[in-house]
Length: 303
Ligand code: GLN
Image (cartoon, rainbow, N blue to C red; front, side, top):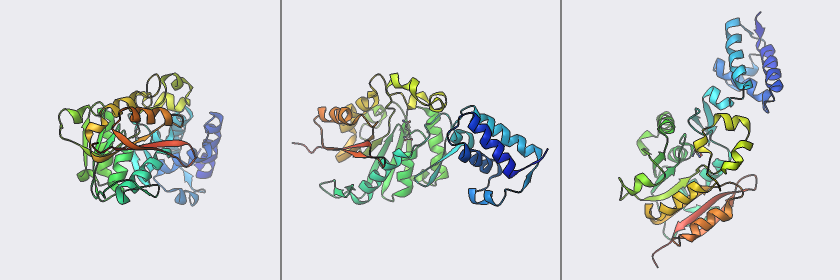
């Protein structure tokens, strides 16, 4: 019972729709392109092609995983972020589009010392030593290493499994020479072993969802993405609190601290930074959807 590509795509779409997969029409094509290693442009030229039974069976296996709620990125093993292809698996969060806004702001700071068109630093910095804390797949730090010439990046995470994904991504993106890796809890490794290690920019998209909200997340996220990358504790602020406590000590002169935040965390995260009395120019910026998404602060000079 061999089927044409068009026929199996229709079967695929219907099966995913019946399983209430939101992007059924897109996902059935992504899975086909992954299986056959063709681009979406090539796919259009293949509609009439008859597929042998063995390939149909392979395709149906992929569909079954998607129907069961496995995110399409974990099935195909990649996610595009900042125009780059990142390997992902269930040890790392799937990089989100919202986070691209954070990376774009960081690129503008690194390249031009400007944030949203405004000068940010009292004195121009040319080279940036960047720390991506809670790096997961390395989406943030490795994008900066790929897209900026004047950076050295350290990617750090508490999960060895996540770090091995980030390491692989650094190799694949050809930036391994500019990137170091560290396994540990937030800034602890940099306070101890690397006592003198200070950065120009600490950037982080830490886990920030309140524990009580986790059960209400989409089932796909809840059942497949790593809980340790999502759960920010009772008030969702545990990781910000931990990072902020040690950040000043790990920053060079006029060093910058930059966070992705949940849309309702602007005041709480800004207050945590404010309370240290070590930062100035604490600002919040929105994502493309107009929601508060990024908090930036500069290490204050000695009074
Ligand atoms: N930094 C990674 C990302 O933005 C992982 C974030 C996390 O694990 N909380 O995708």
